[in-house]
Length: 147
Image 1 (cartoon, one colour):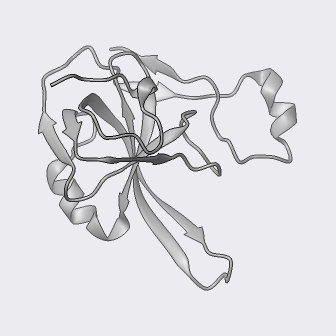
Image 2 (tube, helix red, strand yellow; image 1 turned 90 degrees about the vertical axis):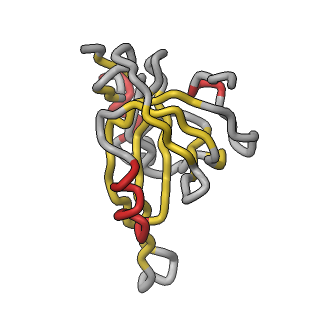
């Protein structure tokens, strides 16, 4: 099965096999417009061998399920996800798409020491002045550390 780079994933495309390392996990909480309803998402940051990153989102109510199949710093071949438009608020990865993962997503462990273990997306110093009043995008150029 063909493995595609994360940089080639676009919103609404059919899921193709990807090989990734899971570098980060968190719960994102947001309030709806009526201020009484909170929405929680289980989020992951994936990186591939090319140093490209993408955010994957699952239901926060399925934390135990995902904890049983996904380990931080582990590498997987992933299929069965859904491609969607990336969040435009508080984005952690500079990518046009993100992945929705559920129980149909398959995470097959792989051995791959070449996939970066740490990634970050700091904005350039010159970009900071423009973000003082517009902090929707949290990231800049995505850089990875291969160890």
